[in-house]
Length: 103
Image (tube, rainbow, N blue to C red; front, side, top):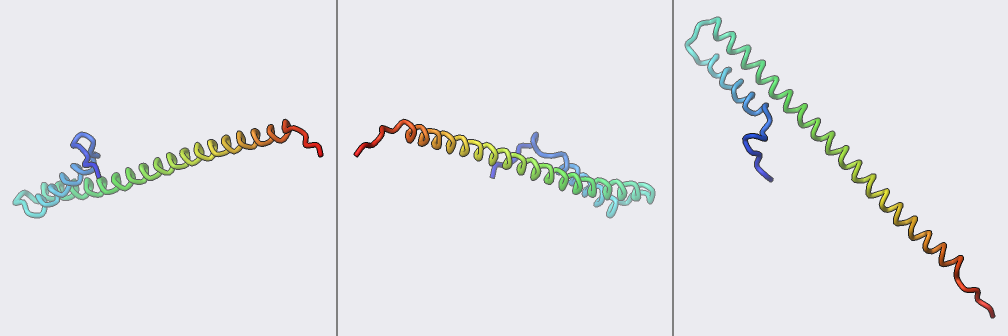
């Protein structure tokens, strides 16, 4: 599997890591009570958002893959029908233009 470059990674990955860092800082830091609450809420909001966006992104990718597969199947079916139609037309032409057999 090809590893994604830093530029092509979704925003959800760094968002999740930053949120985890905020949660860790809120839990273990010796800061004022008001800042601890702000960091805790910010970390929770960011982590929940990152997970939700990640699932939404996967759903969009799965839907796009299904659409692409349906288009490929339709193209294949059309090509097969076209090929079958050409074969039928050739066989029909041969039967019509066959020399008459006399006994």
